Length: 524
Image 1 (cartoon, rainbow, N blue to C red):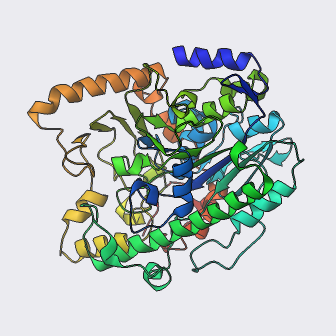
Image 2: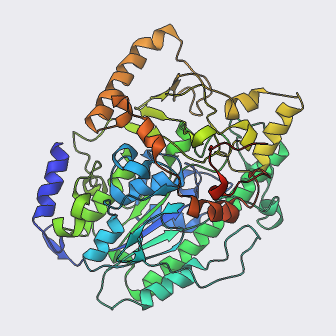
Image 3: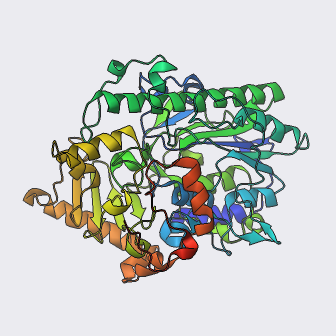
């Protein structure tokens, strides 16, 4: 509360420029770079050798590398909602869900930047999938106008043909020379689908270079090839970032641009994206902004999460109450002190995780509600409806796991009676309580919830988590969780989303037109 009041006081001053070390700075530009489904530590800057990302590595070398950055919700729609608002999902109404209808009364930080005379826009994937609603009889632009018209010849059939960098150049050309800008680079990579074998065939990669396959997948050639195809798409994302950095240098704007590189959620593989384990939420996060960062090449170990992004931009870009509207009530806090190399004594000691409805496919399109807390070495997850299937129902193809070679291998092993252990870890039902010690078990495969020596710690963490959730107004803590599930799916946007991104990988052959769906059930 103290930090929130401090930020509100700062905003109330209505300052037009930053003051740093007594020097007045002109309003900074913003380049927010979001990979679509990248897990920590899958950038070269974090030590991953089988993925080459020289331009992301440059951001880390000339800025700061964050070791403990998290999305509270490991799915693109709700994760991006949190980025845009600085609030947790349980404070966002319908926007807590995937494929949501954006609430009319809810603003976005990009709309606030536009209100403050920033030139705004995005390329690729903005806030999606979902229905942003209408404003002044036009579709709302939650991340500004779309700059995605210019195309290129992609290296594989699965990589988007959007020329992100060329569209950024058009965006820059459209602004007034003295106008600050805020650009959202929403890469569509490394989202599924992949061209199988492209990592080896095009990228020249070696499956043996992968130091370790996570223990919740079988260590087989098809899984390693799947990882290399993922790596190739991350490298395409990085190359586009490199071209954007060159454009900023040519414009003389590089050092006056806050550049943030991250991802919306973990990698699009079973048990990661869309789930609530450490690998699902733990993301790369790099920041470059020389006027503020004094320890270039440094690392930050403090816990941050996506509720911090909007208040950081509001602070550094000098937005006032008029610009922010109802967004002034942030749950997160500005990263300014961390960027300066200072960690306040009252900085958070834990992060909270959340999940309600992600991809549809359960009866009545029910969600799989989870709340979690991650402290320095512990992860506690509470699964509130453990009788449901966590990755989606078997009859509809476990739709909260993207189609992939890894998914197919695990399912085929189970169907043929060869090995069901990986199926259980990735798709099976889960107990109501899960507890993991991350120093011993970073991939969260050994549930210690029933171990007597940990019961006091589990009770302590659950009390801490639930008291904080009650303070923040989580309806599930009030016995009203069904209200989150009652928000309708944005059907109009859903079909196109699945057709574009999943390309039939996991869609059942009996895909039902939304207008024909009355019971909410999908049948064989």
